[in-house]
Amino acid sequence: MTGTASEASAPASSANLGPGFDCLALALEIRCSVRAWRSERWEVRHVGRHRPPPESADAVLAGARLAAGYEHPLRLEVDNHVPIGSGLGSSAAAYTAGAAAAFRSVGQPVDPHRVFRLVTALEGHPDNAAAAVFGGLVLVDPDGRVRKLTMSYAYGLLVLVPAFRLFTRESRSVVPEGFQLPVVVNSLSRMAALVAGLTSGEPEILESALGDELHESSRNRLRPSVGELIGEALGAGAVYAAWSGSGPSVLVLTRSSEIGQVAEALSSSLGDQVEIVRPRIASRGIV
Image (cartoon, rainbow, N blue to C red):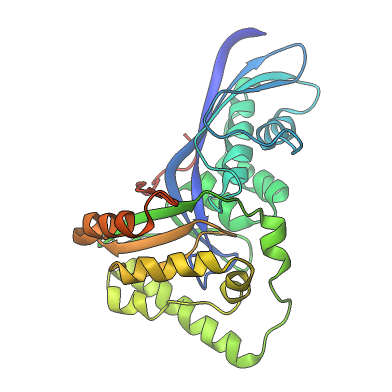
């Protein structure tokens, strides 16, 4: 190991947001941070709260190797606060932070568009990759370009994180590959309402975006408890709730002035079954 450490971090993300399947995501201020040193061999050490299972591939290492090249080994130290297997974009954050730290360590500039392409290739989901790299509320257009949207300050944000895990491969496997025309039309209408409600700050528009038949309906059958959490959130006064990515976490939006009372009501009804997180929106992706 030689020299001083190069550092980078990337945020968690909540993708889909209901009907925005595979094209909308919101960056959350919960981060995966990586320090990298030049070394004689590739090494990675995890010191944070959330660590990858021993049998799984290491996303930070994969992102760093692709960015720096296998011929430039690094020693990596990972401080990850993004829950793994919870639908909060942990792999996208890890790939992004690993790649950005590696670029800095080998003296290359961190071009967000380059990192986005790299992370999308590793992740397979451009929505999570876009949020991790660019931050904020992002839309990935049909040509794969990232469009940052301005989310209204009218909403408060909560994330409900169950104790159990649900990995993307299992959650993705139950999503149908084809849909009838009425389902597609309903989805388009909800998507339009979702974007309008998020950007205008009008809860009545956002409420009309509730529900999804492209991925949430089938995933609710896979894990009914997630649909029940959405119902709990709406019953507690939230204006919107949806599966966060592939779950099982639930993204909850409230009126800004009501976030405290909604959180209190949920804490009372859910007890210690579910962790209630109150993150800020991450306006920046790579730091």
